[in-house]
Amino acid sequence: MTDPVDDLLPPGRLLVLAIQHVLTMYAGAVTVPLVIGSALHLGAAQTAYLVSSDLIACGLVTLVQCLGVGPIGVRLPVMMGVTFVSVGPAIAIASNPALGLPGVFGATIVSGLLGLVIAPVFSRLRSLFAPVVTGTAMVLIGVSLLGAAAGWIAGGGAAQASDPVGVLLAMFVIAVILAINRFARGFLANTAVLLGIVAGFAAAFAAGRIDLTAVASAGWFSLVSPLHFGPPRFDLVSAASMTVVMLITMVESSGMLLALSRITERPLSAADLARGLRADAAGAFIGGLFNSLPYTSYSQNVAIVAMTGVRSRFVVAAAGGLLILLGTLPKLSFLVTAIPPPVIGGAALVMFGMVAANGIQTLGRIDFTAERGSAYVIALALGVGLLPAANSKFFDRFPPAAANFLHNGVMLGIVTALLLNVLLNGAPKSAPVADQPQPSPVE
Image 1 (cartoon, rainbow, N blue to C red):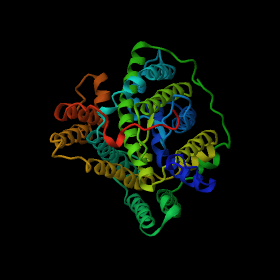
Image 2: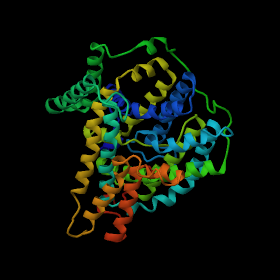
Image 3: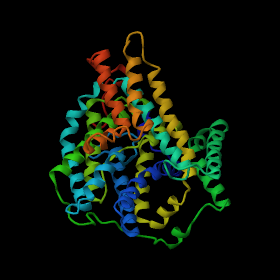
Image 4: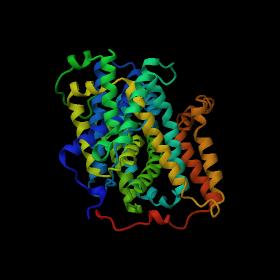
């Protein structure tokens, strides 16, 4: 019997499920280059080029992670996207006139090369990611992302007041998703998020809230060239900054990949985890070459795997191929961009909540009598991790270099959970039973 992770679905079903993954992560994927373009006051053409470059790099790194290239790639249904952790350091580096964007890409390339060396060492810390750590991480990731969903429902701004019509659109999308999950079966139920977004798009179009001007004026085909903004510039401090981003990404990815291994019921060995972390590193190298930034696994797409029960890595690999296509077809890319933020926000509210729900399920397997410290691990990790969300200025008086990373609540929470679990429950001597390494089909 074929492992569900290696199941190759019929082409039609594969394509529809792949489109669902693309629509789920698209808004997050293009946000980073749009934010950087705005912060650096780039022209529309340069910003559009950053977006296209990001989509192509997203697709390439996703293919590497899902399908594998030798010792690189975990071979699980992992959708890769540009990490938000890199935004602050990237803007700081690019704001230096002596470095600019080539300095950002040079630092990203160096961090990727160093990451390839670090990954095998980092993977040996796998036993530290006990269920109390991975479960807490999933809850924290889901809850932290709800702010982004709220911003999209409000119209795209994280702190703006919501538009009642936008809220109604989001509620309509949620209602469609719930109705499909309640009454549909099989393949139709697996596409609930996609159908919810399509229904929301249709409703927004009927309400006159869709602007297709950019779609009409965009070209049909455009190629992205590596190192478009010039040869990379290498600076020691900038490279160190991006390497810290890489380490943070590896902490997040370790928790995400182990959580995904539970969802797909494919246990990960240390070698498997090392391959996944090497893909993160390779993603940074590819990102730097293709005018982009480091990459990491996207939690919203992990939620799609959990919601649909479709574990095939080839579905996500097909989504990676679609991203490459979108990066070369500006008209299609602009059409997806035309989806109103409230429509994406409604679907995101469901998906991000599902990430947290899966974390709660993982925490429910803990024996709190045997692991008496686990309740404190969860309580403090969630508390510390949510500090930046509760007070966005909490770390503003810290040194700028530290504040950029302390504002990452997910990273703070995971590190807190790791340290407290060792302190209160003791360092694990071996991996949990559910994670015991088994023979891997790619070894």
